[in-house]
Image (cartoon, rainbow, N blue to C red; front, side, top):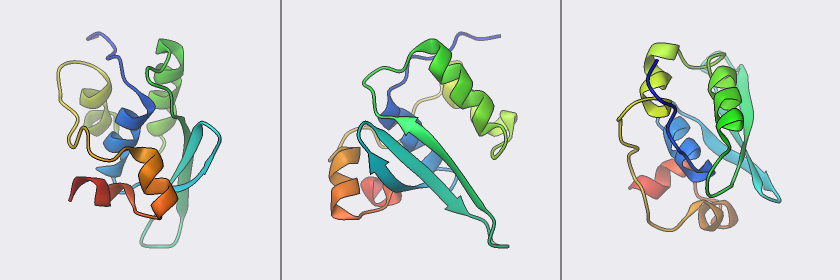
Length: 107
């Protein structure tokens, strides 16, 4: 298995924004991501907004994400060399406080 990447909380949020997740709320140093499926089902999980996530935390988040996104789609973002789109530009906290969606960060 390829080596687990070193990712920040913002990196993880950028990854999951590509799968339709948006920031629903923030409490302290954690953001809650959520997406609503066409049939109305809600999917959510929490992301620590740390500069670098511990490897164990990152592995646990990857496993948790497999409930919502296939391993085939998500694995390249957590393992290997795939780049994360939209790095830079405003920061997650700015978008939370201004009420913008994560997707707005990349426009």
